[in-house]
Length: 288
Image (tube, rainbow, N blue to C red; front, side, top):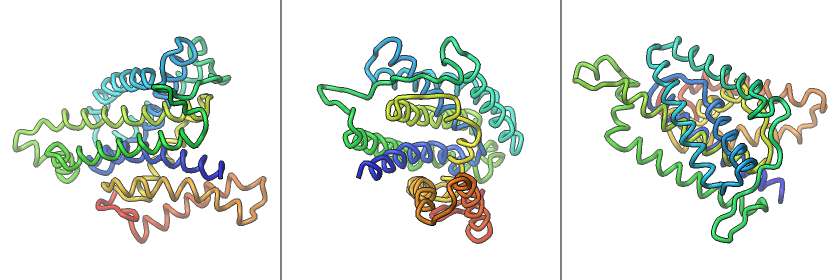
């Protein structure tokens, strides 16, 4: 049972990450691979605040989201100058820059040693130190994020995002300042990724740079491609499938020394097969 609770918490955290990235990639059509950087910023901000100032988890999370959103505003402003493949390459570069900061700013992040001893949340006498209450908290936050994302994509703002994805130049003819819309959704997406990072840091009680490498951004991208672009439920389904698949492989009987490699092989095969036969994903509405 504790093992299943652990997997459910991870599915919730990666479900939030999938929802946040789908707003940018699925609904707006911007191929971003910098989500692990914002995920890490939220995690590190929460870790530093909880271990050095003793703030409440929810206050630390709010400050982490605020910090991440400000940085996302600056990064998004630079990325707005790129188009198409160059946008993806630019986001690729920012992911590496943020990772390098985690690794080398040792006076704050402790570099490769990471930050241990991060506390679990408490509020109004409720303690989330056990995994079952933490799972309930994760599910509640994931539901709130899902409802917020659904509100965004069903609003007039969300319809403009879809129009940007379909034909940005045509939208500009009607007077829409599309750069503002793209920057806004980029910042919102980064803030939601920071929430997932705060949950991750508090759940594991430890953060280090290896959790926020470029591969993590690719994994989050794989979640929404598998689940379905421009479909919020698809983001949750993708997280469910890609978190459980490596665990199911444990029962296949692969040798332990190649199990990690087999996980990557399976991810790759799934994506290749999916792109061949269902490029919009399991529940998607849009082809990348």
